[in-house]
Length: 126
Image (cartoon, rainbow, N blue to C red; front, top):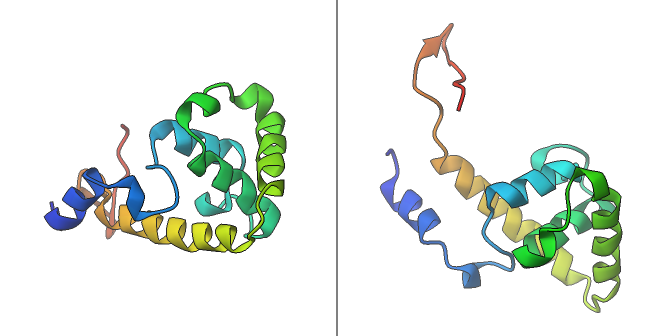
């Protein structure tokens, strides 16, 4: 544990610290499903951020109905929800906060088992 304070802060993360829900495995899978720019799947633009914003700000019960069979429905619902926004700064605030959050998460993420392979750490299967 290189940075125990960061790890503890992450584990005890309070949702009121940011304008979105805590990233879970299920939310990560949905972000991957919509080719989120936050995962490096496409470039950042308003249309590409909206599905990610929806996934990260919607309660999990509402997200449970989405999977690979209805990804287009997920994107359409995200656009409908964004159409209700009256302040476009909400998406800018979300983008900045979520990028900072992901950066913090990357700082504390384990790097694998630490085995060196030609100067780089070897990837491990989980």
